[in-house]
Length: 171
Image (tube, rainbow, N blue to C red; front, side, top):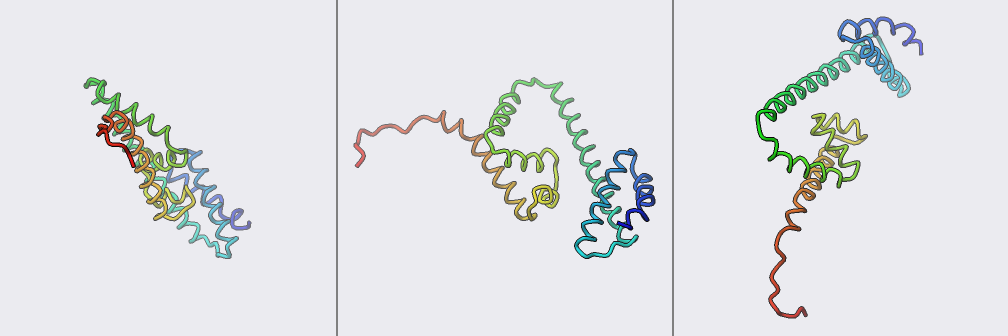
């Protein structure tokens, strides 16, 4: 594609000025031209202005991802600090129960919950990664949460006393 030969250097330089690592800049540059190729194959016109907008969108997404990652690390550091000051005993039971329940889910449900709660992605990004619409992604998250909740409640139901036998025969 001629557009790659003409504009790769400029796009790479623009992305390189905005990001810290060369590897990260190369990844974003590659993604810009992957999107451009798909747009071109779909009959769209690829202009320098269009490429610049794609760069802006991808950089914005990368900045948001980096911010989410930094926020998550801060939250984890705060939790680790709090956990070091507290007796870890009470939380261990819940952690073990959640891990066991997660293992009881299908791989698809685990992936949906991971994207939604570990990576803290918005439904549009979850939808993109799952290859579905944002409303479908929200439904998948809701259903996976419900199944996880059912699995977490299952042990307490098993431990509940059985209904008393009334002595009447079933008819």
